[in-house]
Image (cartoon, rainbow, N blue to C red; front, side, top):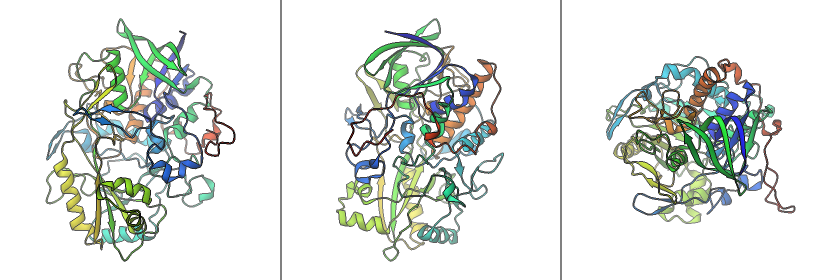
Length: 540
């Protein structure tokens, strides 16, 4: 059993942990990032839909106990970069109203202890570090911004340009999606993104997607004071006299103990809650694990049988016109975006409940435009993560769904049908889809009703911070990654000033000139070994 001392230990290498490492790297402090998984290999299977949408893919072999005692096999990825390795790279800000109390059809979405205006500068920095493409002013629900998007939007092409025009004629404000991809729109040979059909939900073989590994962890590792350990699972945080004095972990099968002045937990809202509960820390409020949210999400693949959709890069169109409701709905509905162009293997999985044949799925691949709907679910103290002693109990039951399904019906009947679509296939995501997990260690101003203070430090402990989406009292209806990154920059700036006597940060600290290809980083990281001659194992 070995003890080593660091200034900062960051548990988790996803969006929150990666941002923390990136933002603290230039302080010279000794920083260790712990990741329970390994690097996702760079190999041919990255872009093989039969593998990605197959039984295993790159998914972690994880099982939870569901609310009725059933086995839940969540779609999660224990890799450097976390779940962002497989995400669709569409990054939104929450709307200003999301920071305030909102009345939904199904109940109340609570306000935050800080407002949009305080968050805005950090959103700007987050858009820079993730190299967001978009056009300000197209989306009438977007909040004020202190500058333009770093890069212009990906244009609509072919059939999607036609759909955008058709929906625009029906009175909708169609906007270009805010994408975190490393592409130069006007001179595409300058940057690695090739706008292919494997962006969502594949890993990027070209390292051209701004995932947490590529955009955050690898650049942080250019600093000699930052180290990453893979295959390092933290089992327990040990508290003494109001501080975490050591962490117990297992690295490559060896049990170890480590200590640091500051411990940062960023394992995702589910695993962070489980770690805190397992360790019996930070829970004097009895709120750890409670108020879990994950969004209500559904897809509609819409078909006009007379029009093929041969667009390769489909994920460029969005619509937020019904974010706050409609003339017929005096309560929020949500967001509409396009997914990546669905391969027939994904269609067979997404619409498995319809019993489609391969021939029917291939027809859908040829014709369909794939719409994605996200609505807010509401925090409920009974929707909670528990640690049973053997594993995670996932007590989640969906809520606020009536308005979600009204949203799908309303958009289909009033817009998609009028735009010429006549066939519709629907799929709603259930328990295993926890991509947008949040809310299990909320921040606030009252230690009796919240886990974290406004700087995301645990009320009960002097040196423990949580910087994944656990802190969020609510999610709005936007993809959460940009909010996680913005908040982690905000918290890292607090640590820089209050702990390290270092300066704050601005957008200049997140330069757009940095191409962030992973090959640029001489990372102090151990990578997995592969057998020679294995054609499916090419590097890391």
